[in-house]
Image 1 (spheres, rainbow, N blue to C red):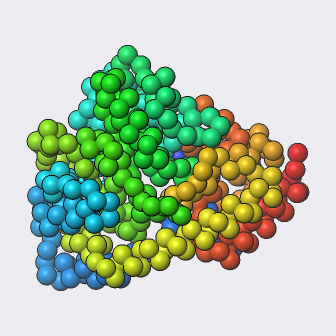
Image 2 (tube, one colour):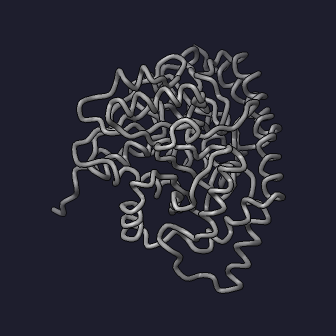
Length: 388
């Protein structure tokens, strides 16, 4: 028998992928499926970015770049922090990576030895715990019951003797919650006092509604910050992200980047230079306003269906719901909703194990308002037909 590493038994499947496969099969059979399950907006990559990528191809800019990214792109990212957040960064602190997943892999490889613990929020993005497994670390749960808020007090309460870092997100997936600046500062202080490191996922930065944008670097300059060109910048398939790291970690991170990845995607890097052009930023902010209108539509309508919004969805493009008033099995609920009304949602089982995931689900408002309105009507019909 061919041997496999034991970590494979601990890598859980994405439950939503089974629903996505079924949704695609129903769509192929001619049914009108409304997709609210996958975390990818319906906007194309902005034209200036596409044009920059095409120019790079036509000019044969297809060779390897430095392992930590094009110097021009690292400077552009540093300028972005200065202009948007009044945070001054040396470009040398920017490490460009193959997606934010590449940045997270580097951060965990930097900090985690076998048997070390990493504190992760529950609910939270499911892949994070599997990246911890990849470096033979131990995922440790930071349970966020009720309001789903992360606080310094909760971090301190759940820190264990073998915990070496905590990984948090702002805005968060699946709740869309944002860490306030004061809480960021308190968490950073708590983690430092415990002798650990703070990793913050800011990949939905830019998609923040009705309040100023923020970076944890304003309060915690030594945090390892992960970001991405996928979400706000609309470059999901280009697979490009970055990390901001403290100076003392740069040499080790560069060595790992050289060995793990060789280099980030060259065409994507040249294309991403256009992400910071004024005309691109204008279009990206317009799209943010469109997403905000969708968010408000759902927040107004969902309570009338007896569905309770968890936390405060002030960013990203998700709303996490307590659906215990209508079901005690959210996976079965999502399956039946898809089969009967052709609306695809994500069950709570994908986002953790201790917060009552069987009574939760996530809506991604990644389609236009007319389709969202139709989805709400189909959801209303389904709840009436199958109510408790």
